[in-house]
Image (cartoon, rainbow, N blue to C red; front, top):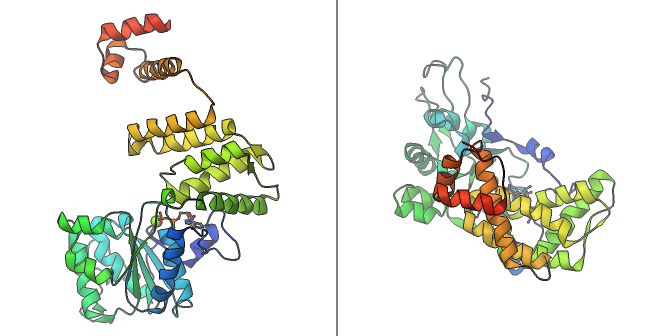
Length: 358
Ligand SMILES: Nc1ncnc2c1ncn2[C@@H]1O[C@H](COP(=O)(O)OP(=O)(O)O)[C@@H](O)[C@H]1O
Ligand SMILES: [Mg+2]
């Protein structure tokens, strides 16, 4: 009996045991009762009962994997295998053999035959996560299998039945990808018989607080310590935070707050520190958005500010960071900041920053 090759792109039901705080008895429970989440929950039932493919779209961290797992868990195939494939992690040249398996010697390095993910899923559920990352040639092969209901291991002519139910997810706008020619229109239609959109946290209103209390309770249960509490002003700050990393970011912030302040009340200053860290992690998404978020949080955390002093502190922070990065090379630091060397020099005198030699 051939064995499925170990692959970091695949996980099975066992992975649920490693999840970070969630309801231990119901790891697939979708927490939240905002209008957007209630609508999503209503759509999951009919999807779960049907054998047809479901495409789950939504930003990173919104809960797409959770929704897939819920669809499978509520459906008639819940006791059958569940195979999760991260398409973004499949090695480009080996996608076909990973999905459909291969015979011994089918290509260089194929020392033994092995079953692919379609075979491993049997008549259970195959979840193609990050489907938008699948290369075009692999999309064509996947389409052929979905249309014919059959596949072959690479290097073999014997047809095997593709009996698994297909769920897929993406954080890309797949319709836009189709228009750009990066995703096949026919495959898109095949995969999206049902289509679900998981809303970002910023569209979930007071669910931000519901999720906060949920994860705070989970952390408390797991650690045995009392849960954290936010005071009224910190709650306002929490509600105003945009959570660009969605539920994943929100959960991680609660974990960090619990680690530092279990059983304590959290004021805006304490919360501010954690939210700022989270925003820094999201900085890659755009420095302007980051600045706006930081400004909003700062204003919410302080009753009044001195704008001139604040801007000077920001400018100074950037100058000092540029000097640190360039090993205090004034010319390079000026280039990094996009200012003349003489301008930087006069700023340094103004700030009284020392040690800016070349
Ligand atoms: N509504 C929710 N209720 C409880 N936990 C959630 C919810 N949405 C997401 N999570 C948790 O947040 C984390 C990120 O969710 P995940 O499904 O991996 O997001 P995605 O696949 O969209 O990036 C997971 O630990 C998941 O269990
Ligand atoms: Mg995911």
